[in-house]
Figure 1 (tube, rainbow, N blue to C red):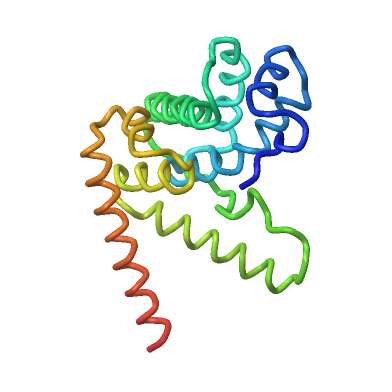
Figure 2 (figure 1 turned 30 degrees about the vertical axis):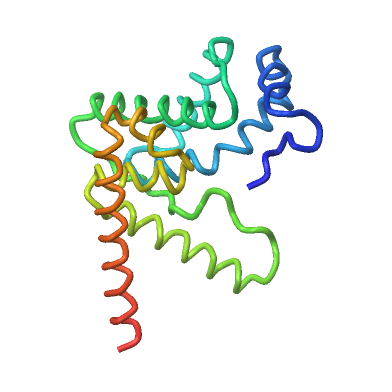
Length: 190
């Protein structure tokens, strides 16, 4: 994914401009990371992921003056905030409320052939549902690593787990996903 600022400003200049209130710079950061953020939230919680994403971006806007680092550090910082919002939301609710928006509703495919677009949306929704069906710790790790694009170290920091635990959870989650996809392909062929 090519960052939105690659044509005009580099990342550091974009963050500096966003700190100074440049709406276009903040929008560039939002466009770059928001789709991954919402996908992550939809995997790890069935609560209102769009509301949680809004809370995350509000925290980002409020804390941007305190942020320092590169693109990877920014990504890790945003996903750490997201993880905290998920935990906070779970504490506020005694029971989980289902998110009724389809998982493929965000980051729609580029306009083109309607049949291709429908297939892409169905595949994205099905993929996110399969990840969501994993045990919560595995879903967290897989979604942060794959959807969020975080490294093992960054994922460990976000989840307050050791790097070894993250690697084990990722391995188990990916093995479970492979098994489920294999089972699905056998049932669809037979």
